[in-house]
Structures are given as structure tokens and as C-alpha cells.
Length: 179
Image 1 (cartoon, rainbow, N blue to C red):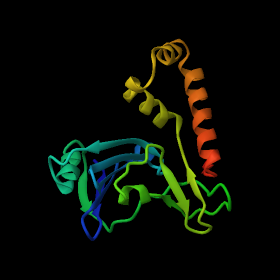
Image 2: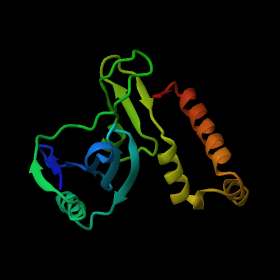
Image 3: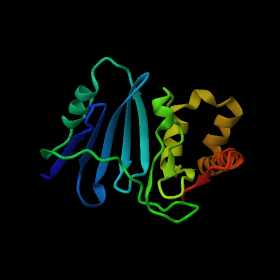
Image 4: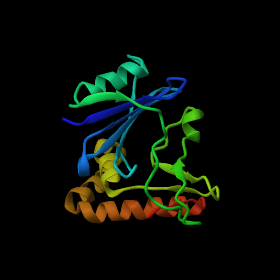
């Protein structure tokens, strides 16, 4: 049985749960956004694995407590800190890179996880293969019949092509990919 760290921001509009051990360490956050509660799953390196928008049927604290019910370990309260990605800025190579949650404050939900370098101000994104695959399979209704056939025929080629489209879109907006 390990230790589970639970922290909340001063305004109690964000909760963070650090749990697991070794290679199985993970982080779960619950953030109050204009249209609901954004639940985000991160790996130990701060990379987004999944995002879900929860309806406001329960409060943010209740959502975090509900998640804790499925986790084994002694719960300890800690000081809240933002989740940081363990990757360098693609422009200046600085390591002070944080999630860009500006869209959350405006009521939007960023589909592709975005980041900002606190040293040089560069905006970037990070899209892992695992997250992209989860996006595709949970949003199959957005693809037409031909695209779904291509996905069924060769998942790897489909994901590679989709990622190339995403890279071009972000490149046109001068937003760099974190590698």
C-alpha cells in the first residue's frame, strides 16, 4: 500500500491526486472550467493520457473524492502545484514548461494539450500516440465511412497520417511540437 497525495488550489477550483509507485506513478487532476469539470489523466512525466469533461452533477471536490475511492493507499494532503511536463521547450530548450490553460479560463477545452515555456514564452503542444489513439476511438462519429475503413485496415498508417495533419495545422499557427 502506497501513499496517495491529494492537493487543492487555494480557491478549491483545482484538485490534484498523485498515486501509484515506480513506473506506475500517475496524476489525476480535476479543474473547474466554465462548462463543467475537466478531469485529466497524466503519466509520471506529466504527459496527458486522457481528458474528460464531467457534467456538474457533483462538485469538483466530490469528483476528486469519488476518484480516490478506487485508489489504494494512505491519503496525505499536500501543497498544490501545477502538473509539469518533463520535456524541454522546443525553442530555447528550457525546462520551465507548463500547461497552457488559457482556453480553460475562456470556457474552452483544448483537445490537443498545449504548453507554454515560462522562460521564452513559446507556445507548443504535445500529442502522444496513446492520447491520439484514445481521441480517435472515442470520437469515431467524427470520421466518415472511408476514414473508418482506413482505420480498420491499417491503424498505424491512419494514426501517422492524422498526426501529420495535426502537425501541419499547428505549424501554420507557428506552434511547435514538444518532442
